[in-house]
Length: 231
Image 1 (cartoon, rainbow, N blue to C red):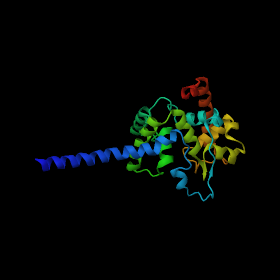
Image 2: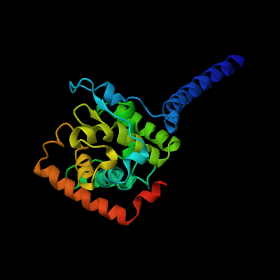
Image 3: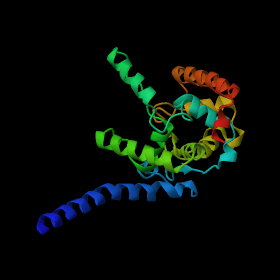
Image 4: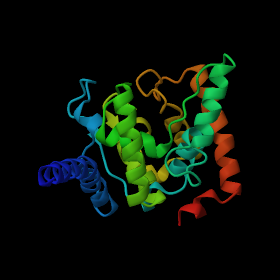
């Protein structure tokens, strides 16, 4: 009887470790970001663009002003302030479109993109997606929405070896991020689905159409005072 109890305690101990260790590691990775800026990201460390050194310049939230946050939300995740990292509504619509034979739509939120860019890799395995979903929830628990958006804008890739809106605005427009116009911010946001194939410095007709659509969405979000949701 005592032997069975010891075996049960050992199993429970290992279960607690198996469950608790990922939680502790995740919190250690994410919670400090509430106060400290990341100096690099997994995508930067895996950069194979050949640019030496890569371009990266941190911009605090006041320097980002209104254009760039609005442009990225308009382009990538208009329900950013409403969902809890995983946009179930967008995921359901994506699957519905696939069942109707339409092109599969991306359903990744800004929080998911942050988890992937900051901690993971561009691979598409189910394991990576599972870890991404877990880290997304931890990010949403630990960080305010405005901080999530601030970090994302500072680490996302805007072109080969060009990370963050600070570096992108200087490289492409020779100005600081707080001087970006809506037109320029929309062009930067338009390349985010694929910043290697879509070029800010050589925009295709598709990219120009996407830029114009983003401009319209930005104007609508501004009328709705969207940024006040992040205060």
